[in-house]
Image 1: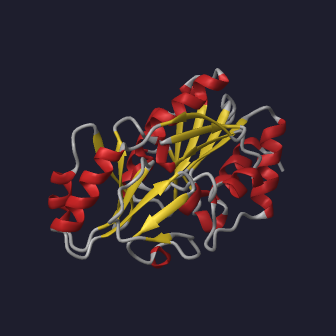
Image 2: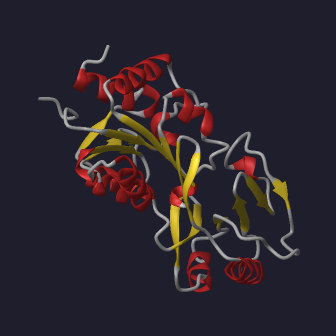
Length: 259
């Protein structure tokens, strides 16, 4: 029997995992997921992106569900079934103290599909749309705060600013986010699993960065990309080819012989 023979849901990260360089999905990947869906396997994406910036990739592989904003929002068939985030009080405290205590900090907030930032976010995410702000106006409730700290030493200062009930998650080199406790990919996947009546042991998850550790550990089968961080490979059950080599689709196809 194949590794994925008992799998009832496949969930994959996007950047550095499903997506090739240039945010591309190959025809091979699309076809593999189409065949997987024909077998009755549920498909989902789990990403730090908003739904607006993840939707076309989710649709390309026929995803049934989606975890976006790193676990703050869960969708089933495009319908929001779970949402959490930061209240205005927390937002105001973190923003004001960060800007005052950490000169040169690059900070942004994401409110549903919009990003508001005090820096050019395309330096980190080419093509990402955003609205420039100096954060002098009172903030609205948001899914998360995104921060690029100017120095390693400023991390300690930033950690002291974050109040109880919230946590910092590293999402890529030099960039971290602030989320409400419980807003994780791992917990969000459990929401989807419950929705579909699927046991976590029957889920296969693919990822590439340390914010995918909980997702891979809690799933029945955790697969890290060849290009993944060493910390993720250390907890994964398997390592597949890199994202640029269609690693996710190659692993699925090689195991289940779909094509």
